[in-house]
Structure formats: structure tokens, C-alpha cells
Length: 449
Image: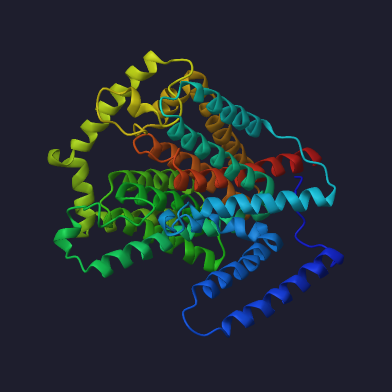
């Protein structure tokens, strides 16, 4: 597999000059620290002088920074006035491109999945001519472009050589979310009775509410389970911790979607690996069942599937589906452009009707839906082929993560607004891109053999 970056390079003149510039910045910082009093200008100057150190990390270790992208999604956008992880992704890609161009190496031709993704982005941009609110539509299209860049970062920059490291990063996402959620609970000092009301104020972490938070945590189980099955000792511990954290988040938020995504992912993983990891698979299923059926909050989560009083949201989704289908019939070719569904609806409806098929068909028309389904189909096919040809524990781990990522995401996006969103979609597409890079690398190895 062709890589754009080389992790090691000789210490040439530009690097020496760069290090001298760093030493100069350190001198400036020492001078600023010596300033006494609450001098606003000094504080602003200190912030400006710290910026080169951030850029230095991005320049010298862009791949390491990319591995942190799945963890940065938990930082609320309002803290910086924009999505911080998107900014880091853009800067890392920009600096990686600069390093590649300065190396003189040629750019590898896009593989099939990348070509389809490019067509999908282009078609989404073309549908902007149908936008009722161009600003909202541009925001929606920007999000599609960012998801493409996440896939590009995974496939072109991380790829097979860093797939395992990305698995660990994504698996660590669930414990980070659980700690963030626990901090909110402790800070607010809310009693158990208030927790059972699923107040949206309770589970608002600045980047998502209850169902969405649980969905992101559930996606990390796609990496947690393979690590528990095939990782080294500390990786197995991380896998079990991640899985337990995802269950805690789904129970604390009493999320049907998160619970269902976790359950389906673990059942499929157990079915695939039961012959190789029988006792571990059965043990995980037993612990999962105990967490939901033996704890009060777990029983409350299960009750949401069975209690008729807990089903109004399902009825609302059916209304969303019916209204979105009507919009698709009225705009079958170009759609209504990204995020424009509310402008064409006769009822109060979200820009995402809680189903990825209907979302793409309404926004981008049937051609856009076809391209999106082809992308998911190619990813699923690659995951299936990779798991069929895996020859060692590392290959098996990556292949199983690839398969579970696609299955869990498609399952959750069938009834939640996840795949097209920035946080969930970024984690999903950087995983798909990286694992797809591992798949292409495996194909090259097989052809050479």
C-alpha cells in the first residue's frame, strides 16, 4: 500500500531552521510569563505564541494527531466556537499534504470506494441548486465534505500500518464518554429518580444528547470486542473496560438505540467468533445480560422496549418516515438539498428523519441514495473479504472491527440521526477508511504471494 507520509526523515536544513524557530518561541514565552498583572494584551500574546507549538505537533506528528481524532469528538463545539476535531482534522490533512508534496512522491490513484465517495460529494454539491435556505444547505454539504476527508485521512494516511492503533483510540472513546457523563451526574447532584426521567438537560454533554451519546459509545464497541478477543493483555483489559463503559452510557441515558446497537454488535461478534473464542463470547453475553436485567436502570432500559407508555418516540419516527417518503416522491431526482427537509414538510420535522436511507433520498435524490448505498456496500464487501482471508490475530482483529463498525453503524442509523452527523460520522468514516486501507494492503500482499 502506498503511503503519503514517511514517519522518519533525515535532519535537513529546513528542520534545523524549524527547531531554531521553536527555540525563539520559547524565548518569547519566557518573556511573556515574566509580565505581571492581568494584562489582556499579554494573555493574547501568550496565546498567539503558544500556537506554533500546536502547529509543530501537527507538522511533526500528523499521523499521531489523526489517531486522536476519535477522542477529540467529545470536546463540545461551543467551547471553541467550532467543532475542534474538525479543525484538527483539516490542519493535519493540510500539513500532511505539504509534507507529501515536498517529498516529490506521486499521488496514488483513488481506489473504487474513494471514486464513489468523490462522486457522492460532487452530487451533493450539485443538489444545492434546489436549496430553499442556501446557508443551511451549505452547512450540510460542508459536513459531507468533512466526512469524506475523514475517510481520506483513514485510508490515505493511517491505513494498514496504524489500524490497530486506531482501534485502541476508538475503543478508548467509550470510557472517555462515560467519565464525561459521570462528571455531569456528579456535578449536578441529581437523585436516581431524576435520572430515570431521561431529562435532556442531564445528558447534554455539549456535543450530543442522550440517544446520540449512547450511539457514539455503542460504535466504540466495534473496536472493544475485537480487542477483548484478540488483543494483548492490556488491550483485552481496554476492550472489556470499553464495553462496560458503553453499557454504562446506554443504561445511564436509558437509550433504546444504544442498547440495540450494542446487543446486535455483540451477538454478531459472538456468532462469528464463537468457535474460536467460545468461553469469552459466552462470558461477554452473560455479563451483558446481567448488566441489563439485574440492575434497576438496566431494567428501565429494557422496559422502554416493552412498556406501551414508552413508545411515543416510535410513533413520531413513523410520522417522520411517512412525511419524508412524500418529500422523496415530490423530488425524486435532485432531492431538496442537504438539511432542507423541514422547508418541504407539512409537519414539524428534523433535518434528519432518523433513517439514513430516507435522509439521503430526500436530501440528494435517488442518485445520491444509490451512491451512498454503493459506498456502504463496498465497505461491507471489503470487511467480509478481509475477515475471510485473515491469517493472524492482528488481521482478525482489524477485520472483525471493520465488519462490526459497518453493522453497528447501519443498524443505529436505521432509526437514529447518526451516520450523517459530524461526530458519529467522523468516527465511522475514519474507521472505514483505515480498515479499507488494511483491506487493500492485504489484497496487494495476496497478489504478490
